Image (cartoon, rainbow, N blue to C red; front, side, top):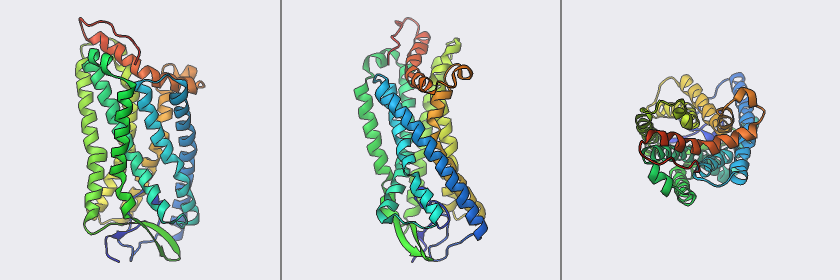
Length: 340
């Protein structure tokens, strides 16, 4: 087998890149270190699975069935679906960790990896859409009030999912299963010269460019609201800000260590540890959003027990308060309705 046939022998195969030099020459840690890593990762995956499925399921129920349909609920519902889908596949990684063997076959090897990158691309694309939507509401409030609609938002969301599926599709073609050292291994079998293209594409399209767009939207929003002296002017964007910052913190290590591996970083121990931490942070991101919805609202200390109500308010009020704050900054314009 050639040197491009790299694999993961020590950590959850389906949700992370490579941490070995070659499938023919795996670097296996000591039994104690390996077992310790397995235990920690399995526990983290179980926790994220429970919190992610329960939390995102609650958001889906509230945004999809309890709240009236709006642009805002459509976007946050789609984000919750993305995270729920990813968390639903975490048990495959837990079983792999416990058994130290990939028992689910080739198709699930490909599909679980695809779901991970589908979640990554769809999450960041949806955050871009949310940021652009907020920027449009602030910069062109009259146009936004008249032209924004649930139907248009739904079309944009569907397009985002289609593009995300295309961007995540390389996993379907490079993931393979082989039998090595008396166990099945789900690994990345990169065609010659393709690893640098795939890793760079994921970083640029799935991280760098979206964040440049998001930062640009923020600059426009800040400039527009600068003349507004009201303390309420910053409130409409706190949940959006929290979601974006959380995504940035959780996914940046993943991309950093993927690029380090691509550039043949020499210290394999540091690289391996970093990749595991990157995987942990990336996985944890999928269970955090519901708690941001619940805990970023008003009077958390007084109403922390009313989590369902807080999630409803966070999702529904985000759009209403944006238009309310924007109307203050636009002199001579009519006061707009708070409906989104």
